[in-house]
Length: 472
Image (cartoon, rainbow, N blue to C red; front, side, top):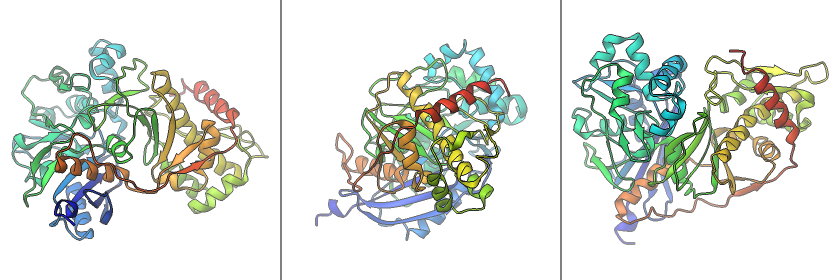
């Protein structure tokens, strides 16, 4: 075996709930070892806890001293505000922190309205975006806002920490993660500093991470390991899956997302589809919901059952749960933009007040939000040739069957894996190779799942969604 075939690469997924690290063969993609560590709960977190968790994951994986390159994928949007000494000013506000909802509305208005905002940065701003959080900071913590000298996102802050975390010149990111800030134009691949200034309400020079090409290294760790550009989590997953135009990925993690690699950008004035960039130089139109895997957790808690038991109950019930419908806005909602919403059960009666129908309705409600999301992508001209289902909730035995019935088509289930971390590892291997294209890794056979279509379920969901639009 040649030296190049022995090269190992590391990929990191610093997600909302945990950090996962995979170490793979740079040529074959074979998994050599892995590690993980938990993140604290909450919608604001001290970023140093991410760095501590990454150190723990590295240790759990047996270290990275034999690794030839590393890349970090991470949760998008989170605001890491740094002072002139490179110190974190306050706990980072995460993507799922909705306190900046009004700030987002204000910025969209000041930028000329939703359509104009979408034209400038590919997306209508919602509470999740970094720009919205910076405006919240300016409105609610003006003294902290005045101290901001640099702004980073979770993935590029961790890449910076690997380099020592002192020199702003060493801060770097990629198009995919930058496209979720609200002050970056993915079409031109340039920051819009005027939006940053507008958000912070001052014109002081703010340092932003430089944009690194998808196949390039951005820096070197203190131990001498080259660090590739990294990516936002969804772009990392698309790269890990080697997604091509026409592939729609439905990811069921803490949040639910539906996204597709595209050769052309989108600018949805309705605000449903975010016009992000991907990790290859193309685009990643995406719809995000706040409520996915935690709906299944809630079902387990409500019913006092395990995930497998909830799945069995759901599959024992009829499609449509005998008229019981769930609007799953347990933590507010991002798409549609209802940050103050709560979950709603509708149609409950004595006949469907039983564990099986409740389990079915909760899984159907969670998935109907993603059926809605795929419809929004189609409305923007995104081709839907294949639907791939990934994420923690996709492992639930009932989810694939019910998803197929709601989408009215076959769904594909790739082998279980940490696709964000895998995408980061693939990116590191790409930069290491110096080749034009990323290496192709085969992670195994894709499972195909088909079930009888049940369009009435989604129709009932839409009726409930629309009927409650003015409730919050």
